Every structure is written in structure tokens, then in C-alpha cells.
Length: 316
Image (tube, rainbow, N blue to C red):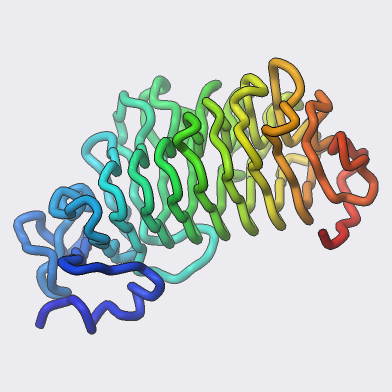
């Protein structure tokens, strides 16, 4: 029996389909890339092989079975086909077991690039553990209007726990309108060296929404931040964090700031807005006072600066 449409209805809930849409199953333990991948009993082995069978703009979907073994990529991955979706078949939570892992000696950076638009990515862990210290960026998003739901972005693991490492990077103004909901960004099971940050804004990424996400790290230096913007111009129009938690798990090394914004104040039309967010193990939202806007009662709304780690949150 064909997988599509009835056998995959629960996994495909709220995933758009159109005429000619196809569904491909990936099972790294039981699959083979010589299989068609369109039936449960003849799955493909790798995400890369399934992606190669997808057609841009067709709302094709790749289903990655979570079974305790990571999909070990053979090279860097570029997801460049618009309206092509990647769905993990696993229980939810901060560490999905439908996991895509970098090659152990990957020399390229980034590991995964989402240059496509209109994609849904759900319940997938992107795990970046290369033995090459030059392999720095885990996931780069350069396309727009994508939705990432319940995903984990874990970068800077092992040897590539180095300055310049990023779990997630938003690049260029084309990375517009992306939504991250219920995602875990960063890693707190290692002590991050200075310059290894969970998230970077670059090139004017705009209209980004982080909703109910956790930004996690264990700071190896007080200069470590959760979100870095090398220059104020790297922040585009109206980026917002809603109900997010920023946590530093090393109480002995209190971070100076959640945000590290360089090169001047944020432009009035290019903003970071925080609604009902929390932090732990950090002294201030923005120690440079560049113009982050918050609704926290002990902060001035135009500065985003606070003192202490216990915050009283008010509804927006």
C-alpha cells in the first residue's frame, strides 16, 4: 500500500499539499537509498536521498523516522527547494530523536543551509559535532517565510566549540518572516568558549519571530552572549522574542548580557522586541544599551536594561 495519503495523515497534519505532492520516508537503521521511499516497508536511508527526489514548489515532504540512531550526513546539506518540508517522526520535546548529524570530519561551514522559502521543519534535531575546528556554523537560514517547530539547533559541540561557532545563524535580509516555535537553540551540556553563541543575526534579517523558545548555554566567560549582532545593521525590521527563556547554567560565571550588539544603536525601524521573556545567570538584557525593547517591569521600555536575574513579567 502506498504511504500517501492515508498512512501518514497524523504526521502530515497542517502540512500543505498540492497536486502531485509526494511523501518520502527516511529510516537510517532500516532503509536503503536504493528503495523508492514511498512506502513504510521500503524507506530510504538518508535525508539527502529523499531530498534529491523532491521537486521544488510541489509541497513534497520528507518524513524522518526517529529510532535512536542519528541520520549521519556525508557532507554539508543545502535545503534549497521552496515549499519542501522535513518532518520528524518522534516524540516531542527539547531534544527530538529524529536527528540529522554532521559528518565527524566536516570541514565546510555551515553544516545545513536553508536557502529555500515556504518550508515547514518540525521535530528535527540538527547536531553539529565535527572534528574540524573550522566547521563553525550549525544551521544557516538564508531563505524566508519558513516555519521551524519543536526543533533543536545544537552547535559548537566537541572540537568546534570555538570562537565563531553558532547553533543558528540568520543571514541576509532575504531571511525574512521566519518563525521558530518551541525550539531549543544552543547547548548547555558543554562550557562554551568565548565567541561560541547560540544565535547570530547577520545581514539585516527581519520579521523573525521566536515563540516559546529556549536559548541555552553554559558560559565559559562573562562576555558570552545568547544573541550576537556584530553591527546594528545586522538586525532588520521588527524581530521579536515572545515568551522565551535565556539561561546560563554556570552560576559562577554570570554573563554580562543576553544580547551582544556592536557598531552603534539599533535604528528606530530595525528593532528587537521582547515580550514576556525570562533570563537566568545573566546580569542585563543589553549591557551596551543599544535599544532592545522589553515589557519587563524593572526595565525602562526604551532601553531593555535590567538588574539581577529574577524578573517580574507583565502581560503585553
